[in-house]
Every structure is written in C-alpha cells, then in structure tokens.
Amino acid sequence: MLTEAEPEFQLVVDCARTAIVTDASPEPPALDAAPDWDRVVELARYHGVVQLLYQGLEPMAHESGDEFTVPESVLTRLSSTVQGKRMRNLAFTTELQEIIERFETRGVRAIPFKGPVLSAATYDDATVREYNDLDLLVHSEDITVSADILEERGYEWRGGTPRLDDAALLGGPVTKAIVHEYEMRGPEFDVELRWRVGDAERPFSPPFDELWDRRDTVAVGGQPLPALAQPDRLLVLAFHGTKHRWYLLKWLCDFVAALESTEADWPHVLARAREAGVERNLLLGAALARDVFGYALPAPILDRLRTDDRVTELARDVVESLATGTPQAPTRLEAARFYLAASDSATALVPFILLHSSLHPTYSEYQFCPLPGPLHPLYYVTWPFRLLLEAPRWQRQQSEEPRNELT
Image (cartoon, helix red, strand yellow):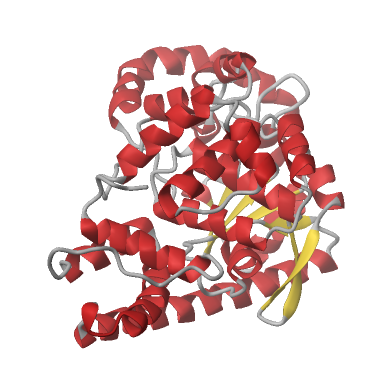
C-alpha cells in the first residue's frame, strides 16, 4: 500500500477504490488533521480521477458521520466539475456513435478501444472515465477509407500536410511505417486512428484480425458498439500502463475496473498474455492493483506473481513514484528502460533497437517531401542526413522530454 504517500493522495486512492471495487468499504484513511482539500482536488485532476473522487467521497462521508466531513463547498465544486465532464463525454459519445455508423456503412472494420467504449465496458457508464479524444483501432486496409470519412466530417490530418498517398505513410513489406497512428483533428474533437495497439519497436503481437474476430459488443449510450473482448481489453490496458510506467492513477483505475468486470478463465488469460508477449505487463498491473488498492487477485494470478521477482521490483518502483503524489511522465530513456525491464523476453531489445525511429524515416521526411507509396524506400536515403543534423536535439529530448499521453 501507499504507506509513504501524503494523506491527501491516500484519500484520492481510497475514494477511487470505493468507486470502482464492488463491496469496497467506504472507510476514510486515518488522518491526524483535516485534509488540504485544494490539494486533494489538485491530485485528482492531475491523475484524471476527479469523477471517481466525487463518487467515492459521498459514501465515505455518509458512512463516517462526524468522524469525517467533507466541506459543502468542496462537494459543490466537484459536482460542478463532474457535471461538465459528463456533458463533454456525452458529446464524445454521440460523435463516436455517428463515426462508427459511417464506418459500418462503408465497410470499415473499427474497434473503439478507449474513450466512451472503455468507460462503458469497465465502469458501466460511458461518461465516468476521463478522456481527451477518441481512439479507434482500424484494419490497416481500411485506414485510407476511415481517414477519408473523417475528413468528410470536417477533420484534418495532423500538421496540415496533405495525405497524398497513405501507402507512403503506412510503409511496406520491408519498410517501416512513417507514423504509427493518424491524428485527425476536428472542430470539436480529436480522433486517433491506429492499425495496431503498440508500435514497431514496442509491438503488441495479436494482429487486428484476431482482435476483430474475438470482439465483443458494448452498449454505449443505448447503442451497441464493437469493443475488445474482455481478456484482450485487460491485456491492452496492462500494455498501455506499462508503456507509460503507470505514472497516472487513472490507468491503474482502468485496469482495476477491467479486473472487476472480467469474468474469465484466468489460466487461459495468462496463456494468451504469454502468446502476446505481455504476461509480465499483466502481472505488473495485477501487482499494482494489489499493492495500491488492496485488490484481491485471482489465485492463478497470485501463483504467477510469486514466481516473478522482477515484477515485485518493478511494482515497488511504481508505488514509490506514485507515493510522491504527482510523479512526472518518464523521459523517453526512462520509459524505454522500464519497458524492456517489464518485457517477457530479453529479445524485446532487438526490435526496440532495430526499429527505433532514429534509424528509419519519420514524419519529418514526409513533411519535407511527400512521396507516393512505391517511392517510400527513397526516404531511407534522406534519413541519415536528418539524423546527423538532429542528433544533438534528439539527445536532449531523450534525457529531458517526458512522454505525455493522458488518454
């Protein structure tokens, strides 16, 4: 547990646990004095769990009576904030429904895997989870059509650079894709189109076809939408949290909520995680659920945790970081080290090095000279010169720039 954390952060964690975990006792943490409520709200905002804080505070205050009181001004402020977020999320939900309807009409295979669908699938409410955009997993063969549909709805592709030929961006049999997602910016919302969960250097092995064949359906705002199957959802959340070193509490809340909502054959889930190369990611998420939230894990997961000392070490590092209250996003170098330490096999280092963006054409080459797909290999002629020119700036970024993703 977060024994070294400030009481305000422990209160945020306890409220989130009360809101997520079935039959969780709404008991407030032992406090020597009244909490700094401004700090409590600040921490909840930073970690993206304001709505979970509000949901947990009300039953906690009710059960505790005079022993733990929440100022009415705090509840009013939180209520107003939560209402605003819910209204925004409802607008996201409507937009997603319309996009998926357009996709289905045009035969686009797409799975929303964050945003309203993840919120509805794990929290049983499309408006609870905090998100800033819509993330869609799309078959690589359907990327062009899906991007066209979004452009018809007023979205623009990143940076304003024209999409002259998607084949040049998506790469080929022996060339790496220039981008790993399409960032589409609209008048009110942003949409990210991805054709795989991970990226070239940090792969998530199940191909889209397998995820599509196993897909589930989730009711979102009264409309059935495609969603990842429960075990796949759990593995994706574990992979995503590990990729970012679990520095935000919201990712762990998502994982715990997914555990709560998953009815699975756990040995089968572990076997699937091993096949996907993310078993240690799954175990790490489980260890954090236990250590931070006191979550009771399934016996097969506990048995595997007892045999993996590295997961214990990684979990301890994450808990110590979370206990600071506002841990910073890891630098690229820190994220890389953590990812490799949490990988199932030392061979993960091979694609991480060989497919690193510094060794392949990037969006910078495309911005300089958009080429048609058949000429994509020519970018490999220009990238060494770009690398030489940008090496000093790249080195500074590796040591100074954080990786920041809040979805």
